[in-house]
Image (cartoon, rainbow, N blue to C red; front, side, top):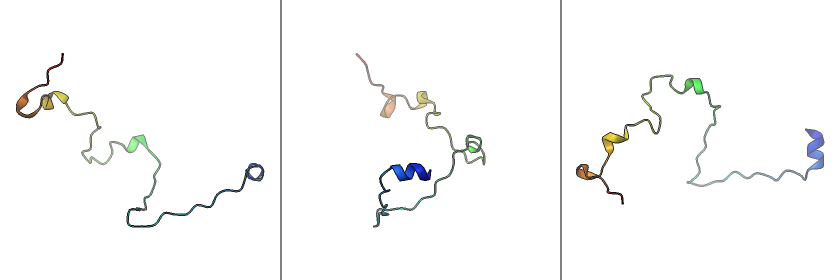
Amino acid sequence: MQELENLLPPRPTQELPKGENVEEVDLHDYDPNERNAGGSGRQEAYASDDDEHAGGPGGIQCSHQ
């Protein structure tokens, strides 16, 4: 790693952004086994049944030509 750093230009300095629109977060490694653990009741984004929400207000469906 040191040899590579010697060959490349120096690393740019990183300045952390500041202000009211900045939020500090923690990143965690993804574990697919924890996805359904805990019984949190969350579902996949596309798991809902689209037929129960078909049509617009009043159950009117859009016509396609």
